[in-house]
Image (cartoon, rainbow, N blue to C red; front, side, top):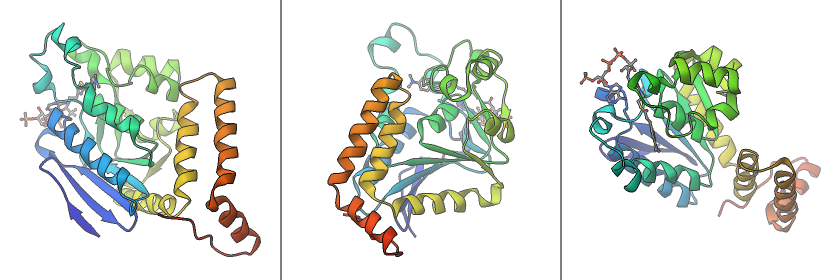
Amino acid sequence: MSSAGGQLIKTERHGKAGLIRLDRPEALNALSDALMAELGAALVKFDADPAIGAIVVTGSERAFAAGADIREMKDRRFPDTFRHDFIAAHWDILLGVKKPIIAAVAGFALGGGCELALMCDIVLAADTARFGQPEINLGIIPGAGGTQRLTRAVGKAKAMDMVLSGRMLTAEEAERANLVARVIPAAELLAEAIKLAEHIAALSPVAVAMAKQAVNSAFETTLRAGILYERQLFLSLFGTPDQREGMAAFLEKRTPRFDQG
Ligand code: DAK
């Protein structure tokens, strides 16, 4: 394991897994512009690094992130919010990351913290995790997918409940609602997330990147267009050495050696 980092995040490498820890404990990892800039830069760096195959984003035991920074937002006024691309630039960086991002969530994941988790590809939750969209208590509404990505994940009934009341969900309730993939005892969360990232990182990088894009397209297009897109990606993988290696290895009863370049 090696580590580095800026002031508001820390990065580590665990084999081919890149780990990003949000590290602003005094504000429960509130997602200030500076923190999001550091997070975006770290994601871009890991995404471009051939030695990394998957990325884990985590917070602390107490908070994954308690939302965007309310102190920073308090004096913002319309129309400047609209004209100057309020907050969005650093958040949008996540959308361009090709490698899988795993959110390892313990403690509070509120507002932008919940939305950040939902922008990741797999959400693993500690049994201590609490998910919520409390923006309504501040006189605003979610602004980073909490009415859209959340609704597609959990359905209208649960999304309305969360967005209109600001109520927090336990990890178990979040799992039942399809907001998270798995609930894990808090003490094992990070090790489990890194293990999952290392497992994915050992697979074919091109197949993994296409699998991510194909699933994400299900949220952005019609079923017919999505099926056609999936078909094109599927067919194109037959032009890769990894498809030949994966299938040959299966038939020869050995572990495949995918092109990790
Ligand atoms: N911002 C700034 N500081 C925060 C914070 C936040 N979101 N959450 C907590 N803190 C700070 C507290 O102010 C406190 O600082 P000091 O008073 O010690 O200086 C410290 O963290 C510890 O918090 P508490 O004393 O409140 O701790 P408790 O255990 O009593 O309560 C809590 C924990 C998480 C229940 C509570 O802190 C809380 O309710 N926090 C606010 C949660 C919230 O409302 N979050 C939603 C914020 S709005 C967008 C992208 C993102 C967004 C919008 C648009 N675009 C891309 C366009 C997102 C918006 C939001 O997230």
